[in-house]
Length: 202
Image (cartoon, rainbow, N blue to C red):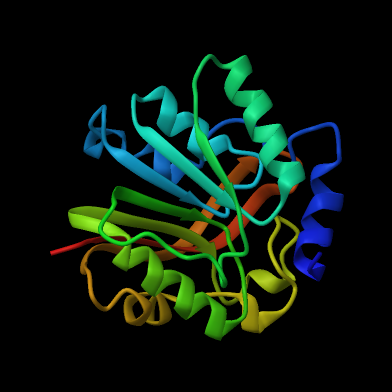
């Protein structure tokens, strides 16, 4: 078991859902872009709040995460909400990523070292079909001193230029930096410095 798996397994053993059971706000705002029957990939989605919301919109969703404890909670939540998701337990840096398979790939607040981040984002881009969308929301530089969540280590925080470079193979539709008010469970709550990216496979 890796240190990261042990860390997230321990966090997800809490009875509550750490980041709530509602979808991320930036993702929910893209509802108009979604079409029932599309294939979606929820990257590092832990307890499944975003994957399950996508499934409730009629998408065929695969959730991939390093924590089997988190995935078990996601499956319980999916059953409770009357929908189905496919799950994969894997380290995102070692997973054999599918290529040209998905209409949407979503990554919400997944923070890893720079080299791993680049690998994951390029694999996300390659996993998309032509016309497919990649969506990311992450904490940006400046968040380390805030109490609203995210890493305390500055190298794990993102910025717009880095995301644009990571997804250089895609057409950028949105690239935003700013402050939002988070209300996502106990771990993400209050004003937060974020970066948001939306790109499309040509």
